[in-house]
Length: 127
Image 1: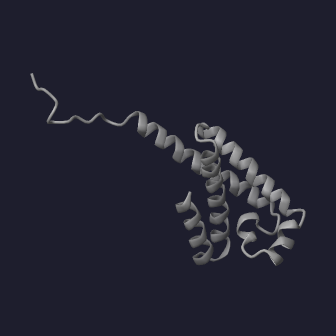
Image 2 (image 1 turned 45 degrees about the vertical axis):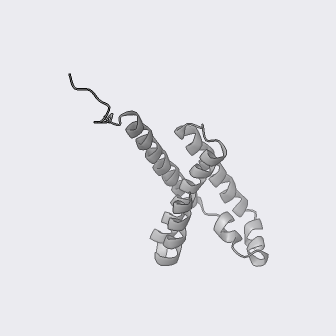
Image 3 (image 1 turned 90 degrees about the horizontal axis):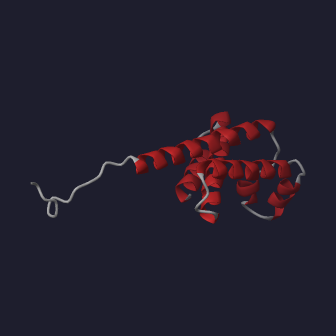
């Protein structure tokens, strides 16, 4: 999770224009997937991704109220967590991030199940 937060902050600071904005939005969704798994570690990948996506959409909908923008004026850094301005395009980029996290989780699960067995040459007998 910390690596994702770091990547998001680096992207925000170094990549200008729409590419940086949308990469940051997708990374926010990835971070939310990790948060869901932190809170509920036994959650399956699809459920974690859907849960994270719903949280992202809820935060985005909150932006439509103007509350995060008002909070930003009095609480430094809150815009990094809650954003400031509602945008429909952000909704789609949350999907991209959640799908990317889901793909990573599925690859991790698949490689964990199909990892070759290792043998200890000191204890294995050869007949």
